[in-house]
Figure (cartoon, rainbow over the protein chains, first blue to last red):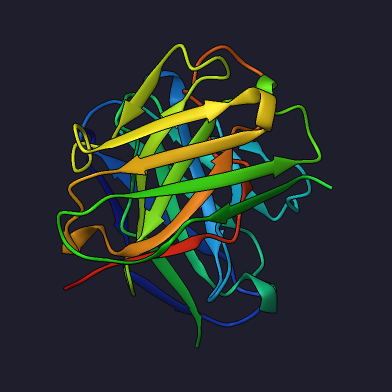
Length: 108
Length: 123
């Protein structure tokens, strides 16, 4: 199976700052079948990005995704208070699908 | 309103079985691939299984292959997960999820999520 490694594990930032989250795959992910999810405590995950760079419905444009092959990035241009959460990448290009271990974005 | 509601979770002894259900509403259920994703206590997300719109194809995580079976009843707008030979490591919150768009495969992201049902495996 494809192993996804997310870094850093925790990102401590202030509102208004930018965030860059990394996701590295152990093998190339076909057709950039990579998604990013946001999860807040006590809530179900929310899809942010699919196809590596396409924003899901209703997702603000401060969220953007990029990358191909084995290296993918989620960028949040300016952190809003509601953006502090855990973020997961996922590959769905090869079964079994797999998630990364998550990056927690916390308030500094 | 698009909605997924899971049920069937509970406390079960190791080695026993449990069947989870997911009731879908607010969309044409038989147009979409569906999934189960779980999250252990204090842990990250783990994809469990996915199934195509017509049950023609399904996939499983290595950790559950041979023990869990995903199925759906399009006439009842329902998704199921039959879990056999349960282990302590299967303890988790189990989410039902839906693909973001119509399609013939299950190779999609998960765009709509339920709130989950908790499974605890313990003697």
